[in-house]
Image 1 (tube, one colour):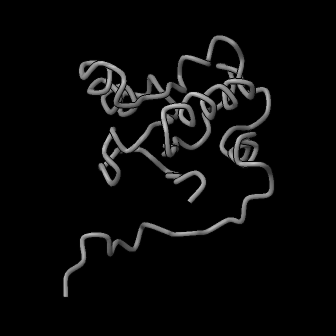
Image 2 (image 1 turned 90 degrees about the vertical axis):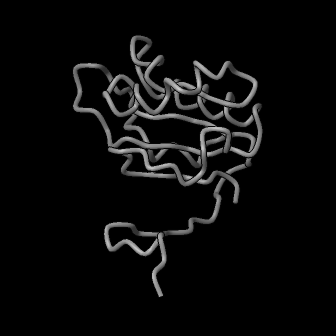
Length: 124
């Protein structure tokens, strides 16, 4: 039996949420506190949220962990945005312009994002 998700380089983990869902504090592990552009970049990540509000809230929370000049490197994407904006996401992620993305499944849950070291399904 061949399964498309049977890859030895993938590791699955479930973490019990320690904080309120709406605080997004359980995402703090993704970025070292006070990350600056002069620091080595953390592992690239994608966070999938359940709603447009979740994506914006989670991205805003993650912005608080990085310097001002890096906040644009962690955007949020959802179906309310233009197709051209959504389509640029994977390209900017792959090119290293973004260190992470927070999105709904509009981006394509299960999409092969080269360079993504961590994928989070927030609140599942």
